[in-house]
Length: 354
Image (cartoon, rainbow, N blue to C red):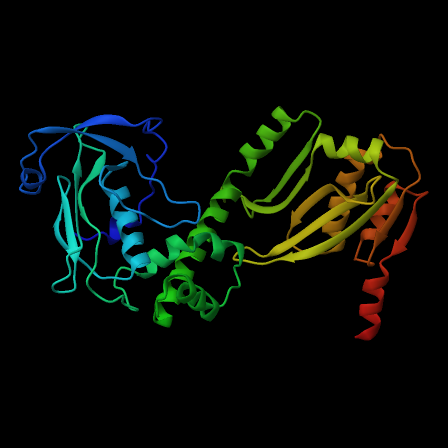
């Protein structure tokens, strides 16, 4: 049986088993257990498996794993970490026996379920190797790379494959082929895109929860329906919490800077934002809007809702700073006729250099 598919599963039961303390488990003798005889013959103290603070894996006899899949995932990480190839002798729901693939090496491991028939326990471990560390490992698949480096790729969506390859070599001493790195990166990006797509479907529910849990907050979702019976598509989203409104009105000077930036990823668009300055000269976010692009219509929609949320209750004379985006000045003058308008010097300088 292959571990590749099982590694891809979510370890959803990882936090459901109570490992708050060590406990006594029934265990069979080593020889009988490897032969499939699970009659208990002695009692052994089990302990939950835990990675070290640095993420290093140390395997010991008596360690407990949530299930067989959990054990397989940890063992694969350990094999890559230690740099040896694995030969599986038994690999089923009743027992897992493996040894180092190098002929003559004495490393060996055996694990099987305890009496609850789900939790796996290491019962035999010969930890010493008599072989050399390998720099190419069949366990380091694209699936493995995607799982181990998922957070790094998600935080740096533009990360280059050659950088990721060097990082894997630095940590594990592995020389992986470029196509493995590319497949791993694309795997993570596809999962991320699917998560983003699902998040758009949950915006209605998110808005309901925000308004219910944060009374006074403004959450607006604007969709388009091409024709009757057609599914709605996302166009714009406005968000400003009640705490942001109160913080601006009672803790910030009457100054708002508005700007937009392009969103990267599978779903393009623009993020519009309204930012204030607090008493410590720190940046204080007031409102955001995700929309289809910077245009007179989108800026008017954003400024209109910003005024509805804070401007109708704040009578101070405002100062706005922008970089002359389309529609911004007209929308501001419509709602704040007494306001002063300033332009960002850095944007003006950049425009003059073009």
